[in-house]
Length: 171
Image 1 (cartoon, rainbow, N blue to C red):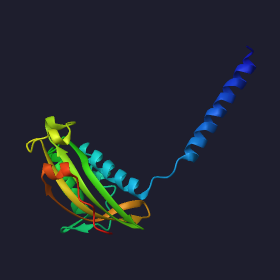
Image 2 (image 1 turned 90 degrees about the vertical axis):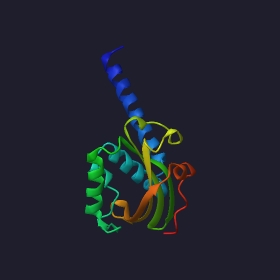
Image 3 (image 1 turned 135 degrees about the horizontal axis):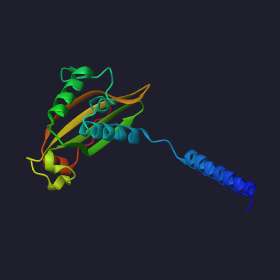
């Protein structure tokens, strides 16, 4: 086959591949508000488990205030626990979201696993291997996307996490 024909075939194949990619992307729907909020918490848990404190804080608003802490105070608290190595991984055990316009609430069970507990299912963990914290968060849509503006938290029993978080209050 002549070289020119091969070049034209390769160029044609590249154009077809580019067209398929464009059509595929154009056909995707943008993530819903709930999907965006879920991703915010999943990304924060992954970053906390990897001890990337600044990335774990990406979803916390500059306007955050709760429990006597502002954003800086929460960052220091997360850094303290992450750098102490108190957990080997962090993950979301349960999450419920309620969105109304530019405001939302989420109830989140965060699982902090120690050492050998990494990767075990929630039902197989003991209190010595993991702890669960239940967060009730208020979020607002900001220019950069959804951000947590207020939160309360408490330790939760593993049995509570197995049952799943309650529905959040209206925003």
